[in-house]
Length: 218
Image (tube, rainbow, N blue to C red; front, top):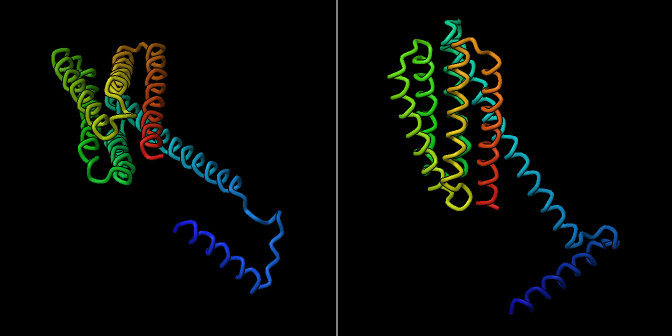
């Protein structure tokens, strides 16, 4: 029955061509190969756009995180403005996650915001060298990272594996703490090296987000 409908459809199109006296030159017709090529090109463009978006979000993440850290430890002006911009980063991430996952992503967004709030406390305790409070707060940060990894895996179990997510968030936390402690001690070369580690971790997480989403929703 379907084949009959298809044949009639092509016959109808053929009649339309005759009615409107349209000369369909072979070179002007779109072949299945052309359609497939256009679809493939469109998919590639969407994938690249998603990758760029998440990299921008994570570049913002580490840049404003560092701005907050330096302003707090060195008692510089602008700390509140930097902190506000850092928290906006989690809002921007939430907007993109909402577009894809809807309300199911709210818990993940809340946990990422919490990650930023705990980081601010970490910088405070590094500044005043309160080792006991720093140890306790870092344990909270570690637990927060575990919850983030769990929630990511819950949203995307096939392409956001738990062990990979936990490792990446852990590496980012460690690099951020190394930045703060080395900055406070004046070990600036070590601080620079730690920032490079944080940057690499952020790009890896960004690509983890984008590639996971693209593979989940091809």
